[in-house]
Image (cartoon, rainbow, N blue to C red; front, side):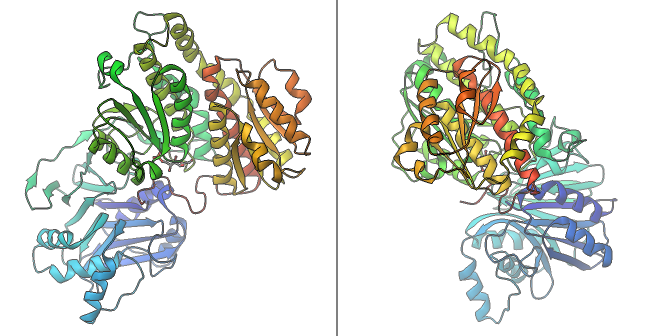
Length: 611
Ligand code: F6R
């Protein structure tokens, strides 16, 4: 949460920092602020709301400089006010700082400083850190930062300016992500590599307990104990075009429409089709055939949309992996008394690889001896480093706050993983493996066929835009897809939506049904089709309009529903790849018709780095 951007170099720092903040707004948009070093003075501008507000403010009262830092906030401590917006500054104006994370002992430190007469301008947990560093600063900025870090509890990424230093600035990481970028005579920092791509692909991913000094000469890296560290710059293969909307009105729509090609990319080289290998997860995959045979338990742990992908994979694992399967939200798993050992395969799914609860859950499973794997889009993320082994999604940067293309990448990676295990466990014969892998290779085209019918989903959304709320139902993996459909809808349209296993509807949720509450039934033609059909009829008997996501050729469903969308036929186990897409588009169009801010839904942030 919170976006951070910093720049030093020959360009106009205001322009670079604001451009970066716009790119990072998906991390928070409660307030925005910027600080510019102008000679021995630091100019600050901040405001409530988006970066656009900050831009407008700077047009009226301009700032300039070659060294600047900026912040876009997702509020945790202290309300959404100008005073609480970053950057924060100490009483003497010596230290200016922006922060992502939480300082747990801010209250204690605040009292200590208050007793000495300090007066704070904000209610944040950040401002005290500027006071603390300032109180420790004589002439060695690194020493002051190190001493301050030793007194802080919690998680933090800081970018720090000193008023009497205009040719260097400092970054600190303990927890939340911070990446540095370099180019000839330029030094950048940001919360996410996407903000740096327009300027450089030479990137250094900071690790925990590191301090960086950034200057026109480049980056000098130190441990919290002051030991110099080697700078590990690498060239990333993402490029700036991946982070632009192009001709699309919203990133979310662009990313939904990219899903056919994402699926191809995730499968490339991993599915041999009719070849000898079948599924080949490559050399980076850390488990041997023998490991696979020894696994007794499989834990799939994640948050939000990633947890829905985990739930789909859990159903597949029930069928093929012959293991005790546990799928759980990371925020629950981490506090449970979870039994893991060397025969437990614990899989942590996270597009960002920075979700605090997923990280904590992975730490716990590792400490208890589980064999761990991260399934993530960010191979340099904290999760990837914590776990050590990564199955990469290859989805490219996802900017829309509502996850879509990474969900398809997760489904693909997890499906391959479960089928690979199933084969080693002797539960997937050669014929079935080939049927599934050949169909996987055909899925991108089928998915693109659905994308070509966006207009019919827009019209469907138009017919239901005044609904009071929506109830999503499905069985098995289609229940997980119902949960994902409901999540997408409420995230971006703010319309109430809930999802239940279809068989659970009559145990309570049925009470809320009436003519104003459509039931969205995910009902592909699979083993559970007839059971779900009965539930649809129960809902219909209570006057609820029925929207069915069904399989092509299912003429019966027309009789029982008011609105149908047909997905191409596929193998029963693979229907989630197709049923989720119309639900993403339905949510997108409904939100658009209701005039919502699709790429920046209220109260949400793309990467949830607080617990
Ligand atoms: C929903 C959404 C969130 C994330 C969740 C986990 O559209 O984006 O529910 O799925 O915050 O994030 P990651 O996958 O980064 O761990």
